[in-house]
Image (cartoon, rainbow, N blue to C red; front, side, top):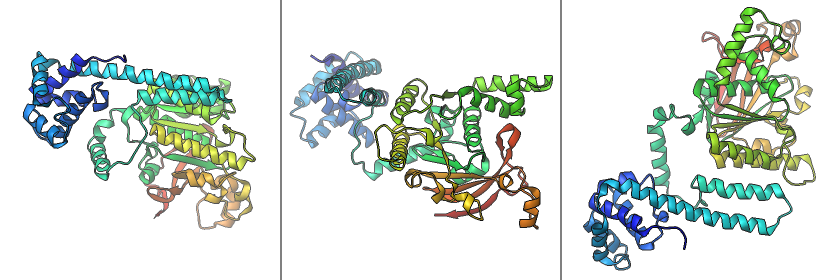
Length: 458
């Protein structure tokens, strides 16, 4: 027989019939499917129905609720409800009874999961990674209480939104429950409201524009300033190179000096202070080269089990490999972006992906990027919820060239245009950040410097 304890189930129900207010202790722990006995499940459903309507829970009201559903006689009638009260010594231990019911329910689900995993093994599929991924999914869904989703009434969705709004201040202290991850750049957050759960965000630019630096700065700001747990897949740079960049940026010491150990005593102190700050930041880096999407997904879920991550960063899209053989790179990129979007929704966290732009920008008089410049596939634009371009005029123009072309404008030294080219749930437009090249660091502009170039609502 599957593990179960009818006595614990009846004691939990008897406690509710004795003291209806005890439902506030059981409702967070157990749900009707956790009961092994069908009639016990029906009785608990009746108690929950009364609780949601703010009605009293006692023997009379539960009997009426079951009768209204034509389940009273199948549950054993009023006599069985009296029996539940008689076998319950006290309602004070209701939480203990509920935890027994929950534990045994999870053991039954674990047995069912093991049967599913055994079935995957017996299928002996040709792709080992895919089989392992399916198996991990089964355990992941079991741990997180996931089940196939069906239709939900709009009232329930609205209730969730109201609950989220009322708890935002409290959630600010609980990084595992963040509703959005701030970028740390005020003007960018004004546009986006932070990076939203389940969103796929693309940060794109031509080489040397600073897109990886921006992603790193966002990771640092989220982790250090907001204690958000960030998982970073670095397919292009080694973890040592990334960390050196972070240290240089945090310490405001030239990146070259950090790499070559050429620093003054004062800079050495700033570096040690920076190391102390960054060592406490919940940032996890995987620098495996040529990673497949399925590996990325498995590793992210595994870390989520252990640390409850709040954001994933991938650098960069062009080096991610698909899981199946396809005819061309366009189809492969389409598969990768779809998979990353699914991962964002599945884990309910933002996934930020760094991407290259095509050379089309170099052929135009205006070098500012457009959505059509996204490299390899239009699916990037289609699947992304947010597309952000990084562009710097001082990369293309010397002060002399700029003075000829724009005689009435000041040379934009160290100015980076951050172009929000797509925003599925908000405005698009441009803002500006300060880029300090020798520190590979972005900063907010001073308050008295205009940073918003334009904004438009879609």
